[in-house]
Each structure stands twice: as C-alpha cells, then as structure tokens.
Image (cartoon, rainbow, N blue to C red; front, side, top):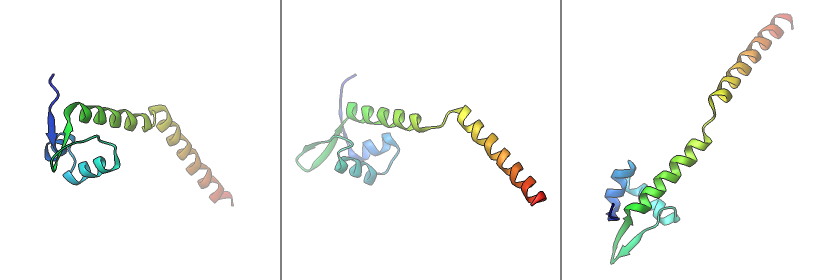
Length: 89
C-alpha cells in the first residue's frame, strides 16, 4: 500500500467527522500534519494509526458484560430494599 497525502476534507470524510474537528486534532497535536505552502495535509498511514488508537482506547473504556449485569442486579436489589424500607418505615 502506498502512503498518500490527504487533504483536510478527505481526512474528515474518511474519519466521519467535520473538517473543523480535523483541524482541532491537528492543532492539539493529536493528528500529525505536513504543510506544503498553505496546504495542510495528513499522511494516510498517520490517519490510520490515529483511528486505530482511538478505537482501542474507546473499546478499553467500555464496561464488560458482567460489569453491566452486576450493576443491573445491584440496582434491582437497591430498588427492592427501598420498597421494603418504605413499607416498614
């Protein structure tokens, strides 16, 4: 695969975000850019690496299925306790 330079609109389209978001990412240094004159360009490999890192980071923050089930059980028990306390209190 040859590494090509992408314009900001192309990066926005591939990442499914706005051009403004792409420019913010570049300004914050999260997405490396190359400037040729006044044009801001991003290497395709840099975009792929960025998107992959965001996907991994996002998926690592998601709760596991067992954690979600545990929260549901805890919530159910809490509601039952409140109902019993309300009846007796």
